Length: 246
Image (cartoon, rainbow, N blue to C red; front, side):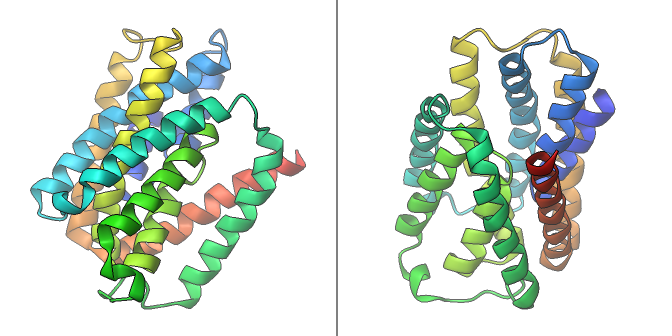
């Protein structure tokens, strides 16, 4: 489980997708836990690695804090609202829709070779805080009620709508994703679905993974992150298709 948490932290720090590793590992190794407890404990583990990754990116000068003040609040509210909507929305309905959206994201990114590699100035980038707030609210809500591909959707929106390079988009995504994780963790914790002491060893492993992943991303830059992004989106898409047809 420590190895799974380390790997999840590593992937999450670069482009997200750590839940594809960590949640199945928790379900397999600890079948005595209720699904809600698995999800809540996963949020606790994940937020530790995301904290370290966000701090590393901020320390490296890749986070523009002034443009994230309102989006951080929007992400928290969106995730909290999404968690409430989870009781009314069926995952079986969401999977096909998300699979189609992820396929569109993958194809668009693959065809636009320059996307995320050079700084651009699309019309929507003239109001970065407003656009980021909308992204944070919508994707935060999605993270609250479903989740798979949250980081990928957020990164794609920032590169496509704000003209960011992948490295900066990753850094901003980690800050906002930390906020959505916190909102979900508060919700699960309030409901008693978090194994706090049990998760301590896995927290440490996830922190190490987050540190390694963020260091590698900053060292290799946007071209590396773009390739990693395409692979992870493809993996999330494959998993969703498997869940639909299984």
